[in-house]
Structure formats: C-alpha cells, structure tokens
Length: 222
Ligand SMILES: O=C(O)CCC(=O)C(=O)O
Image (tube, rainbow, N blue to C red; front, side, top):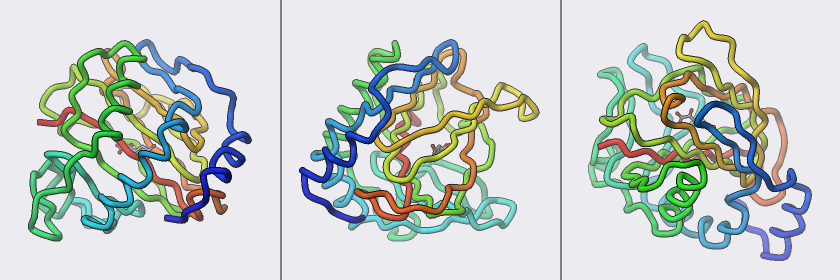
C-alpha cells in the first residue's frame, strides 16, 4: 500500500463525492466519504493485518482462481477452496488464527451499521479484498453466515468501482452504483441476501492507495 502524508490525504479526498447518505434499497445505504475521517487510524491497522496475513488468490469450488486477492481479520475468515466456501478461525495459508480485528476497523463498522439502522452490530469477520485493474467479483449472495439478521458493512478504498446491487434472484437486473475511496455501503434486513458484485476495476492509480482498490466487508458470521 502506498503511503502519502496527512496533507496529501486531505488534498486527495477534497476531490471526493460530497458527503451524504444515499438509499440504495429498503434497508441499504451508501454513506459517501464516511470512512475518510477514520483513515489515519484505519490504514496503519490494515497494514499491520496484511503484514501478518498477506493477500492471496483463492480457488473457487469450481476450480477458478478468484481475480480479487483476499485476506481476513477477526475471529473468522471467509475462505474458498475446491472443497467449498466456509468461514474458518484458521488462516489456511499460515495454519494460524487470523489477525485480530483491530479496534478502529471494528468501531467504524459498528458506527456505520448503526447509521443505517442496525444497532448492536457485532462483527466477527472482516474480509479484505484487493482488486487490481481488471479484477472483479461476480454476482453472489452472502450466505455462509449463521445469522442473517446482522447487516454487511462494506468499506471502499482506492480506485473507484461499479458495485452491482441486484435482487433476490440472480436474474434480477442489478443497479449500478459507483463506489469511491472512503465510501461505506451497508445492506441488511430485507436486503441482506440481495445478489451483489463488482464490475472489472478500470485502469488507474489512486493518489493514496496506488493502482488498486481495497474493499473491507464486515460480517457477523459465527
Ligand atoms: O468489493 C466489494 O465492493 C464487494 C465485495 C463483496 O461482494 C463481498 O466481499 O462479498
């Protein structure tokens, strides 16, 4: 991850979307620039997590290597392999527990969930996806968690993305929502199982994060 000074941070981010809340579903919102004030705390925490558990490309049960590289922190990490998708307390690459969920990341997720109407969110899993230009995430539902009453909180950093927010059937036409550095999306309640995904990331270099997009998704999985 590229590091810039604090002054750069505020200059870069002055180019951002205006702050505000956009409703994207009955119980789903995008909070523009919500994570920006947290970045000085969040980025060092993220860097420490990734030093312990670096990004890796996992394979789907169908044998495809995911274009997004991933890591995790928290009590549980989402994994995929030829054997299936599952949450595991152990990082399969290191055969050690995933790094702890840092306090700043946890607080950001809890605060954003509450702002979307989901008080009492207790995330135990933070999946960290890294997309380089061309990487994508195909439409899917988040269904490996035990309790669907908790929302998904998703923090976007770096290059912009087009987020696909679909319906409850894979065939439902998804809405396209641009997500920028610092935006936080929250979906839950009646929207919790909506299909979602990310179109291939366009070429570019983000002034703070370099030629990549990093997405953090917080879930109550266990
Ligand atoms: O990268 C994103 O914005 C979405 C990530 C995602 O769909 C997921 O982790 O389930």
